[in-house]
Image (cartoon, rainbow, N blue to C red):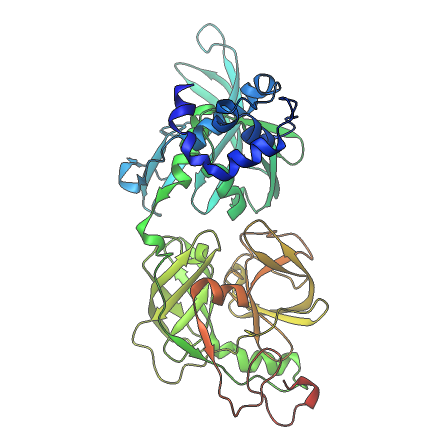
Length: 468
């Protein structure tokens, strides 16, 4: 009980009053972790209002409560062991399993945790052995999962055959019973913010399980669970999530109501760019004449600089000003930008309307400046943010590109990689209003302008119903 007494003060007076007011002769039920935290806490113990069900639930919840009470240690990426790995997907890689490591490779450097879950048949000395299992790599952006098998192996001659296969296009990650379903492609699954939050709370006692294709189960070891907590709690100065963008951007005139897809595309593509890093490519779009570009955080990853390609073939370098892993957004500035940049109008005054027409522009599968169209299928809410759901076809490389309404205004940043990538009729974008709020960006408008519902100047030929 010493730990409880020492950490009692963190619960505060409010919880004590609540406990006393709700206590009825120690008869409180404990149905979940929130109940356990309330009725089995240090406050409940000191004031003798603990539930008799606390002992029954101790093995299930006590480690989570103790973990919350312990002082938090700041973790820096310099604390990670450095290893050199180029191909971790070999069934026999020299990988430090279950440890948080800093990986140096010819494809780039990154923080990671590797896990291996396998079964072995035979001993390999007196008889050949077979081995099958699941290997996974966890990084700040992605979870990579592959199944493998090694057949007819022995200690001297090795294995006659080795096979490695990426798992399907969807998996479930269960963290202490909470299920997170994520979608991906070719064995690579982007990690959403709500899963990162759950992994940050993990401990050596946290149960983490992978459910692959709805049937194959792979348990993550306790040591790996604790290492994942370290990985997702790391203090990475490159995130720049708290840096301020002390700059206002000007509202841009929208198209008129009679604009067709062709007109929207011709007006928009000069403001859409392809972003290239040493680990891949994505899309972004210009929001100011001072060279500001919006994109997804996972597009720029941990880079400080990226290469930006324009529709006319011009190539520039851009500097990352701010990024946010939880919101998956980033803002860049083009170095040596020119005055003829064409920023896109942003729908900064109204959320999208379900059923309205939308156009997506991006660089999927290296097919530069591809255009698709659809509608807003819904507005969805996750633990961390709202999302625009659309049936406009979205693929890898669309990430960070604009989702546009019928007036050529950006209503959201496409997030192809993080949610539902490769699932037909199901794509998502981050509402531009939430992006601007997260970055602290303000859109300036002039009082004498006629503004539409999105807050942008419109052509006087447009119908009066679109005026404020």
